[in-house]
Image (cartoon, rainbow, N blue to C red):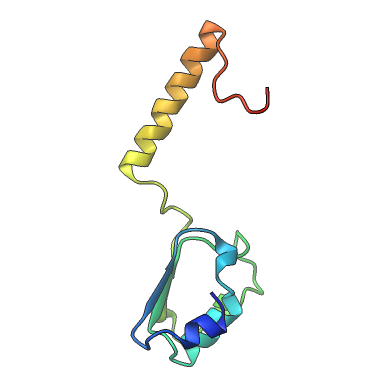
Length: 105
């Protein structure tokens, strides 16, 4: 998402990114928010994590237009359960001497 994409959005648009940080050009997002091109944004991922002191997101004029969460959108109840199920299956396989999730071997 760059300034060209933001300029084509409705002024009432709210841009959400829970995918990958580099998808959004942060300096362009700040310009879009500061200039009223879009209404607001929510980010669960950033171009560079953790946030550095020179991050352009820190230059937003109205912080109410931007919500940043701590890279936690993945952590639904279902995702955590799948994670624990995988851990249990990996431990069981290890104890049995079995290989799981083998890549290239």
